[in-house]
Image (cartoon, rainbow, N blue to C red; front, top):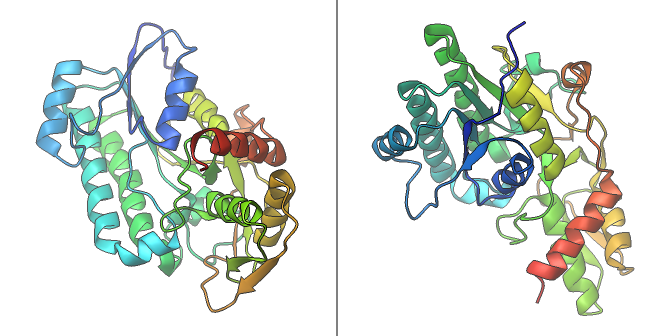
Length: 314
């Protein structure tokens, strides 16, 4: 077993610190004895390998968390596939190669559960990767994230770099994207349900049948897992991060409606795609290492709705 990575006195760069995941990691690292490095998009284009290398050469981070990515839901992936593939490949390559060139001691690359085949056996084990076709509605993002995993493995195998990959399940929490054109299912439902309540309208239309099953993890739980893995994980294979619990989209809508205080009901548009029928992560490897999520879904949704009301609602 390798020695744990000691955060004391280390400079940790959180790439993508303005996003939901990156900002949660920054919050979590604030309680650790390390220095957190961040850089705004206006000052550094993470797609530019030369600029990223120059910045890392000046700042000399000891560790890197790659939380930067171009993200979005089914509609966003369908309308901008080239952007999702190109931008994510460019960001990953620039940061991971830059970490190698500047002697970064530890790197955690964050991917997504969409890397797994659409019909992967449930719950999804890490070794399901590349065993079947991807879900077509987000394959561009998935392919980029698979490339990121393989890039970390390649630098580990060829150069001995301590670069690891973690695959989070569906995330939600403060800082989420509530734009209906580009958001994921939980914030999209929250925004729709809030708007319907505000207008005394209903029922709320939901894309698809409402039967697909999804797992959700609060972003603050993910951030805690990232720090745990930063310290303790040093293996070639990526590791799943999730709650190990799932429910249907209909059940999620009902839960959100209860939190929001909406009773107008739902209709389901079966002409719209459902996406993957079920996506539950096998988190037994992470559990065996001693980490488990702490935030209950209902409590997390309630906290997220409070954040939404304070920061985004009209």
